[in-house]
Amino acid sequence: MHLYNLKVPSDQVSFEQAVKKGLGQDMGLYFPSEFKPFDNIDTLLEMPFVERSAKVLQQLIGDELSEDVISELVANAFVFPAPLAPVNDHIYCLELFHGPTLAFKDFGARFMAQCLSTLSKGQKITILTATSGDTGAAVAHAFHGIDNIDVVILFPKGKISPLQEKLFSTLGGNIHTVAIESDFDACQHLVKTAFEDKDVREGLHLNSANSINISRLMAQICYYFEAFSQLNKVQRENTIVSVPSGNFGNLTAAMFAKMLGLPIKRFVAATNLNDTVPRFWASGEWKPNATVATMSNAMDVSQPNNWPRIQALFDKGMLNKDILSAVSIDEDYTQLAMRNLANEGYVSEPHAAVAFKALTSQLQDGETGIFLGTAHPAKFRETVENVLGQPIALPEPLVEVADKESLSVPLPNDYQQLKQHLFNIL
Ligand SMILES: *Cc1c(COP(=O)(O)O)cnc(C)c1O
Image (cartoon, rainbow, N blue to C red; front, side, top):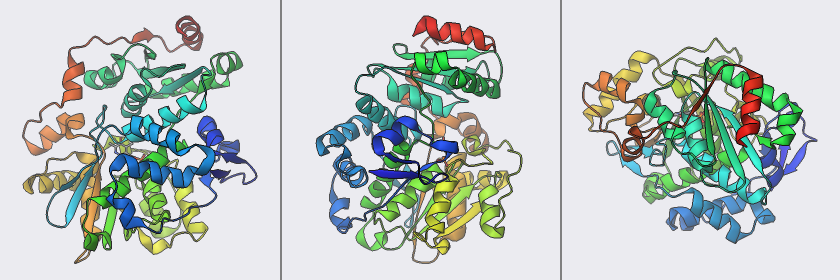
């Protein structure tokens, strides 16, 4: 596989380098130099999920990794299903929340962990990351028990729900969690300081495993194929996909799937009140506002870091602009959408509800619509219970951790103490 940096095109890398480096020079994103579309999509769609996913990833990665290695990575990463749940006769939710941390980020994080583990060939790596919730849990579970890789997660003490904290702080082993006595920005600042500190960066072989890593997007391509495999042949020719978007990684993956030949007819970029992209799509002006807090808080992003990859697909003429519509859904309509879905017998949460509402505004007669269910409703239990006025049962992974002891170590917002702690535990 060959990739180039969208900001510095002369910065060109292999798949292995792109996975290990994450970001390129000048903070540029790596982008595949070519997409070879499959010509036998129907045959591909008949295969089982794991086997087909290996074929899709092989098509991108090429001979840099052998077929056997890719098959093994995929089999280890994708150990839970991605079912297409019908809401009515022409609208479906692609449920991506059946993994260990109940959110779609499990797919990308698990595949990235498998890739890093294989590509580092036994060299020691420390993943250092700050989280305000979901990403930390997905990364912690993905790397738990992987040899030679330690994970250190900083989070703001008392600022995330106890259950959310327990999803990543009860694992132990190679997963170390630190409760910083401050807010999320302070955690991010400590991480940044550590990456700038040569002793720590080189001594501990730091890696950020962050959301712009190309391996995450590649994993996410696979579940769009899985969605289409569950449609009949007539539907496959006439289906639009609505993606609840924050940093726009998930939508990038959907577009990459189309570049590989999956016949997605159109895309809907669904955002909450953080509507930089819908405003940009309408006016041509990129004017991020201050981020506002919403019920769909994993999408509270006003400067989406994956957007340059989508922009590149249009700028290079790989996709036509009329294939994308961008819709912002406010808080009232998000609640209304949750109630509409419940009336159809489908209990959902705010992120999926935003995508559902945006989908119904764009769906035309005769078309099939898929919106993405990015998190389990129980992850947003309070909101869901408040809006729908009905109790939500806790799913297995949350029940399991509820009574476990958090293993987090509290530390003040002080870099020297954090550094000391890192050298003590690693
Ligand atoms: C991260 C996240 C999103 C946004 O996905 P992007 O790839 O950043 O656009 C949507 N929903 C949930 C539940 C998430 O955790």
